Structure formats: C-alpha cells, structure tokens
Image (cartoon, rainbow, N blue to C red; front, side, top):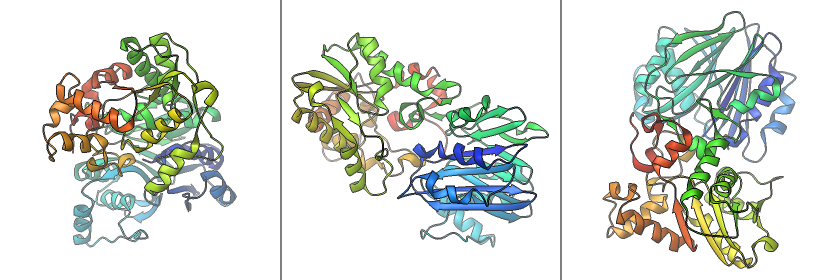
Amino acid sequence: MSGFFGVVSEQPCISDLFYGTDYHSHLGTKRAGMATFDNGQAHQNIHNIQNSHFRPKFAKDLDEMKGNVGIGVISDTEAQPVMVNSHLGRWAICTVSKINNIEELEQECLQQHQQFTDLSRGKTNPTELVALLISQGKDFVDGIENVYRKVKGSCSMLILTPDGVIAARDRYGRTPIVIGRRGNDYALASESHSYVNMGYETCRFVGPGEVLKVTTEGGIKVLRQAEEKLQICSFLWIYYGYPCTEYEGINAEEVRYNLGRIMGQRDDITPDFVSPIPDSGIGMALGYSNGRQIPYKRGLLKYTPTWSRSFMPVSQADRFLVARMKLIPSRAMLAGKEVVFCDDSIVRGTQLRDNVKMLYDYGAKKVHVRISCPPLVHGCAFLNFSESKTDRELITRRVIEELEGGQVRNLEAYHDSSTKEYAKMVEVIRQHVGVDTLKFNTVEDVCQAIGLPKERVCLHCFDASSYGD
C-alpha cells in the first residue's frame, strides 16, 4: 500500500506537506518523497525509509524546499514523486497503484520510442510508467484517460503543476482521495485524518474515475466527471486505514466497532472478557464487548514506542520477529481466564498460532478467536498492500488444497459460510492456530458494518465477486 498528500496554499506549504505526508506512514514501508514548485522552480527529495521513520529522514530537507504547492508520498514500493518535463510542461506525479500488466505496457512505451530512467530496483518504476502514459495524451485529462484505459489493476494519482494539484482517483475508486479546506488553502490526501490537526476540514470525497484540479485562485475545478460504479476496498476499513479516517464519509473505527458488535450479538460463548489483538482489533473488541455484554480488558499489549506494524518490514523473517516482539501478554490478566480475542484477519496463520501459544503459556484457560472479516480465499488483485499475499501463501488456500485432495477447486463452496466445506475449512484453520473456537464474520456482515451495498465495495479477497480489470 502507499498513501499520498498534496497541498495548495496561499502561503508556503512545506510544513503542512511534511506533517500531512508523515500522517500516512502507517501505509508504506520503503520509500518516501516530497516535491514542490516555487515560481516555476521544482524541488524534490526522496529517501529510503526502511530503517528509519519519515520525519527524521526529511527534517533536514525542509529549509531547501520552497513553494505554495506540493505533493508527498509514503510508498510501499517505488521511489516517488517522479519529476517530468514533457509537452505538458514541468510537473510531478505520485501514485497509489498496482499495475498487473506492467510488462505489456513497458513494451508498448518502448515501441513508441519512450524511455525509462528509474531502474534502481532492476524493474521499471510504476509511477514513471504512469507518467509516460499520461504524456501520450494531448492534455492531462486525455493522458489520465489513457491510464484508465490501459492499466489493469488500479491507479489513483496526484499531479503537481506549477499552479496547483490535479487529483485523479482510480476509475473504480478502489483507493480513496479526500479533500480538506482551510479558507483558500486545500489539502488532498489518501486519509482524511492527515490534515485535521492543521486546521483543514473535509469538503469533498473525490468520486471513482473523477479528475479535479485544485488551485487557490479557482478552488476545485472538475476536469472529468465521476463514474457511477464504485469498488472501494473493504480492507481499508477492516485494517489498513487509520482508525479516525473516513472513506466515503464512513469512519474506519465505527466500522470496526460494528463488526465486533455484530459478531458479539450472535456469539454463543461466555468468556470472562474480550481482548483485542492490537491495534486493528481494538475497535472490533470494543464492539464485541457491547454486543456480547461482557467486559473489555487488555490481555495483550502492544509495545508502541519502537515497533511498527508487522506488515511493514521487508522480509518475512523480519515480519515474524516484529509480530512476536511487539506484543506482550499480561499474565495477571490471562491466568486462569477464558478469553475471546478479536483480530482483523488471518493471512498465513503463523503469527496468530505463535500468539495463541504465548497466551496459553501465560495461563489462559481457554482462548477463542473472532475475526472481523471473512476468510481470505483470494490474494488481492487490485492493490499493492497485499502484494506479498499470493493465493498460495494464504492459509485458506493451503487448507482447501488439502481438503480437495491436492487441488484448488470448488472455491465457491468455501466462500459460503452455510456450506459443510466452509465449516470444515474453518475447523482445520482452528486446529492449525490452536484455539478453542474460531469464527469469522461474513461478507454480508462486512457490508452491513460499512453501510454500503455489496456492489459498491470490493470484496475480491473474500469471494472474487468484484468487477473490473
């Protein structure tokens, strides 16, 4: 995953740009960058953030970056923003994207005598590829339409020009863009919480496929109307979004609370208390406590000063290390107790199995696990935040293959929580992670908790029901 932030201001914007970009640090792991224009002069800085946080890496760049307009990005993949000088003028671009047909588009650009310059990782920079596709258009809107037509996957972007910022949301709206306003100043962001401490208030959620240009003189100008179809990723609410952010006007923490409440109201166990597996399990556990009418207590604590979210380190070994080291059990809370733990999802199952063993080792009498989303049966086809979670890595796929005699088939039966196949899959996963009971919410629960109809939410990882490339 990645997250971006842009500023259009009547005053120097670098402070807002610095802090607004930093507020997206929960979405990226590898690279970060900022770009500004000051009277037509471009400024750009990009740093590797794999072994450090955004703020200390970029604090030394603030004095040299000037201007009233700028964009910044925390990226899980490539170095960006990319600076461009083309027939469209001088501009910069940052993206949140996953391009499934990148090799095909590379060859197409090369055949048109275009060139790629960023090969630092041995691969074409996806944001540079998007910039080349835009440069094929007669203007920015035509170029963005070219991206929408050709990219299979998803792509949202911010384009920095000398006088403003163009925002273009993925044509199915899989990733969000929201706009905040403070007088005549504007902030454009992936996450709405990123600008509230700087005095901006949300004024607009960009629609799927919509293209806007924001300037201080003209405000918000629509360059391309929004599409009717929406497929925003449900996992933004379930896990990746910061709790106080909003997508389509719907708060992430409220959705997590609803998922827990729905689960608690229909559950049939009587534990001593409910505890979250922090951080994304907190909202669900609070909702479960209310729905089940049992106490909320913290039997497992996250050590926050130095340990990041476990999806962020680059290697799988490092992810396991972070997952183990950041969570500390409370023996006094657990000893002799029957506890239900709430978590957002089960991907490979390894981390949860290790956590569960630790809970029993610290004296828990019984451990029940409740998961806010349905089983992940398909790897994400549209967003980079689950790039590493291929189908084969998912515990559900390994279990299905085992149950189906060494083949992956009959997947529809495993999507449906009313089938015997689904029940058997959940039972095998329960045995693997070693808990007393295990339950998942359903696709219908997710849509109810979010408050959007199923056809407007991307649910591909649960039941492959989403449309689009």
